[in-house]
Length: 102
Image 1: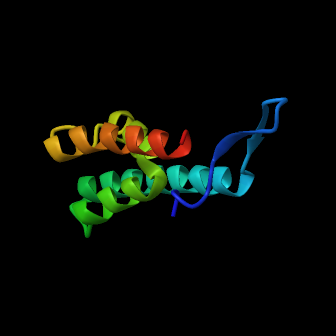
Image 2: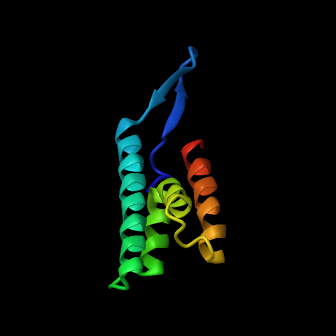
Image 3: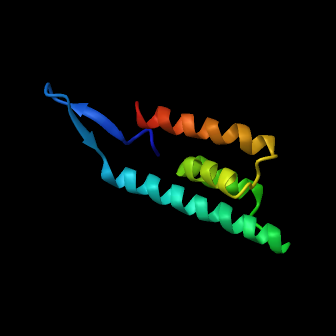
């Protein structure tokens, strides 16, 4: 999905910065949604109620919400003991940066 769309690129000899706003809005939406998904899962954990699966939390982070997931993890102290989340979160962020800056 990201490979076919350039997020930021330079055009012409004037090196004008062109930003694809639709991709930027998608990225912003995914991060906000993932942030609230982690917050809701933390709330459900405190209530000992039905929760979001770890696979789904990681999938949302991978699909574009890695920054929101990372902030939510530390703000709500949620999933910070799980090595999978601690290692994959920053990996997803670097992966998205790599794709955006290609």
